[in-house]
Image 1 (spheres, rainbow, N blue to C red):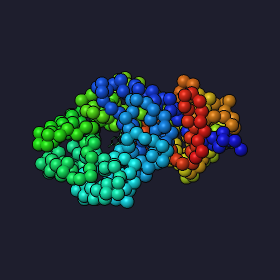
Image 2 (image 1 turned 90 degrees about the horizontal axis):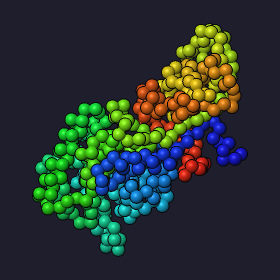
Image 3 (image 1 turned 180 degrees about the horizontal axis):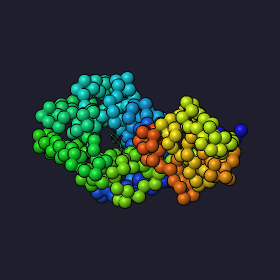
Image 4 (image 1 turned 180 degrees about the vertical axis):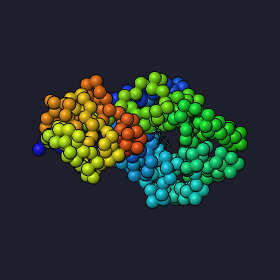
Length: 394
Ligand SMILES: *Cc1c(COP(=O)(O)O)cnc(C)c1O
C-alpha cells in the first residue's frame, strides 16, 4: 500500500496556497495598520489546524492565532508554533499553568478566574517563571454569550484586573452577533457600545489596552469601522462566506477545500425498484445508478438524502434515496461514460460545474461552517503547498 492508496475512497484536498491568498486579499481590505489573527478553532474549521497554521505563521499579515479550547492551543504549541495564541472561550483551571508557561492568552470575564490566575501567576513567579498570565478581557455587547457588560460593573471589573498582580492585559474584545446581515444597524450598535466602553476605560484609568478587537469575517469584509487594532478572521480564511447576505465583490476569496470520491459500483435497475433505506426513492423507468462509498460516517450529511448531487465527468448526478453511514447512490443514467473507478466530486469544481459548501450546507439544513467542521476523521486530507501535494498521515 502506498500513501496515495488511502485516498481512493474519499479525500479532502486543502489548498494552503489559497488560504494564504485569501489572507492577503482580506488584508488589503483593512484599515492600514490593523493586525490580523487567524481563527483555527475546531481543527481549522475542519481543514486541519496544524497544517493551516504552519502555512500561515510565516506571513507578516498574520499576527497570531485564535482557538476555542486549551487543548487546541496546546496542539499548536506542540507543533512548534511560536506566534501568540488566544483561547476565545472559557478555560478550566486544570489548564492554567500550562497556558501561562506557554504564553497562551486567556479570555477573561470572571472574577474567580482572575483570582485563580493571579494566585498561580504569583506563585510561579516566586519559582522564577518570568511569564505573567496574559489576558484579553471579553465584553458582551450583544451576544449574551460570555463577557462582562460594558457598564459600571464592567468598568469595576476592568479596574480590578488592572490592579491584580501577575496579570498582563494584552487585549480587550467583543463579538458581533449580526455583522453578516445586510442591515448593519445591530452590528453598529454593538461597535458603538464597545467604543464607548473603551473610552470610559481610558478616562477612568488613563490606560489604553494595546489590542482592542471586534471584527469577525463579516466585519472584515463589510465593516471597516470594526477594524480597531486587530481583526479575527475565521470562515473567510478558508474561502467560505459568513452568510449569503455578504456581497461577494469586495474581497476575492477562493474556497480551499474540495472533497472527492470514486465510483465503486455501477448497475442498471428496472422501473419500480427502490433505492436505499426506507425505499424513499422508486425508479420510474430503467435507470443506471452508481454507488459512492461515502456517508454520514464521513460527515457527508444525511440531510442531503434525495436532495443533493455530486459531479461526475463535469455533470450533475443527483443523490437517489437516503445517504447511509458509509455509502450512497447516484443517478448516472444520463452520464453514459460513468464507470467504476471514475472520480466523483462531492465539493469543488469539475469542468464548468461547481459544488460549494454554501450550497450543500443550505440543501442539508446545515450551514457552511457546520458542513466544514463536520468533515470526519475518517477522511484523509491531501494538502497543496506551494503547488505541491503533501499526503497527511491521519
Ligand atoms: C469563531 C469566532 C470568530 C471567527 O468568526 P468567523 O465568522 O468564522 O470569521 C471570531 N471571534 C470569535 C469570538 C469567535 O468565536
